[in-house]
Length: 209
Image (tube, rainbow, N blue to C red; front, top):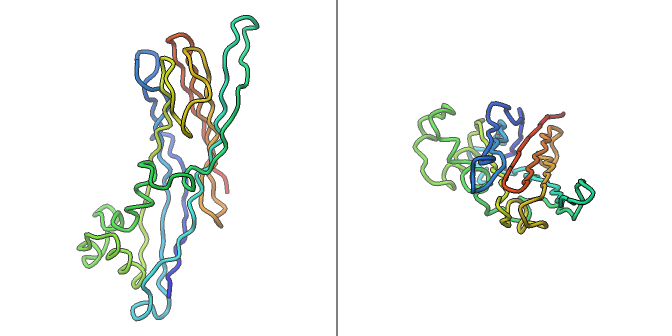
């Protein structure tokens, strides 16, 4: 018998959006942001005797990554292509998803979530999961992403290899984040421009129900 998990209060707090790299950096450029949400598991009526697993909604981390190259003759950005992908389905072992994929139940044992002593004592993910399945609990979780782009003509930075390399390019990522079967969504746009060693990064976000 499985207990059921639900997700609520999904958002991207603006105070947690931080620029990475940029004009004075020779490394990568972009932003760091957190997707935060509340997890609740309700044990079945016979939970203490029967429940040994939890039915979890599927994380949907959808990204549309567009690449542009600057045409110095026309002084315009030429669209070079895009990558559209559910990044969690594509690579759930990514470090971005470690809180959700590997540690969602042991995070519940953290003192900030005010767990009962029995749950706080759990050190293994499987043990914490079984306790929560049988007893029920609610706790806070976050997923941190750092969608950086390698500057100075580098490759990589979102969905695999860059579709445009060189020191004059633009990358725009449209995020659509949430959980299957849940109405709450977080949508963001991350833009990084590299213009001959001058980088500009901007991010906008909103949530919807």
